[in-house]
Length: 324
Image (cartoon, rainbow, N blue to C red):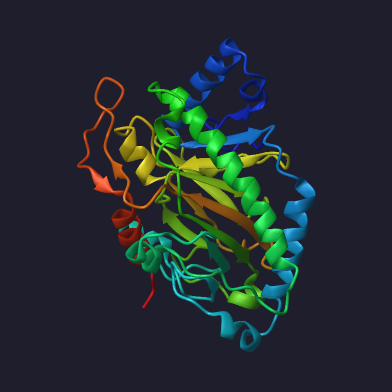
């Protein structure tokens, strides 16, 4: 591991959880609890997600991003929509009150595939995904990947319920019809985005908004950094076999800030490698719309937050990072 990387982000093997052995599961839960109380991040191996699928998905997305802007424009959307988020659409630092120039990225964004029965919920949180005709294989690849992510998310939430203490179903019982977001983020070099402005990032400093985020990323000089009180900003550790998992604001509130929402950023294209290009696959786990998120009491929880409607909170956060 890079000695400059965050030491408080452990790599955990999910194998003991699959084994069903109570002692092995308890030990894994303790490790997870300790990690989420410091950085809010983990690397997980033994997750069962096919690396070849991840590679094919990147190749298809790269072919789309390489298209001229005029070909991508018909798929343009706004933050929280379905389709292509072009340059300058987001500034993630806004969510925490950090005023930065717009993020140096483009995204393909997809979300919940199953409509809701309630018309108001359906209107707010379900819209058909938009699949680019120029890359017809993308839909099948995304849907296979999202099926894998949904299964992994549920497993992680069972593990988190055990780690927190109330029991394995503490979070999963709020997952009968969850929403989710899925972004394929493209971070091109300066030949595409130009020289970064002062204080400009590929993604500005922020915390995620939902429950758990599952990230498949590529390493680079202009890559992911994680913030901790001990180390400040440091490069996130990287393992090509691992997925990076962090918790978001709703999960932190649920735990009464026992676990911290992992603050992070993605550095701009590096001066020493200005043509560096990276693609990240980012799955944002959420919960069923209308879930009331209430902080667990002391001594497990540390802060008693006001209860919030999960999706009122999420909508407010999504609106906050939109660049008008």
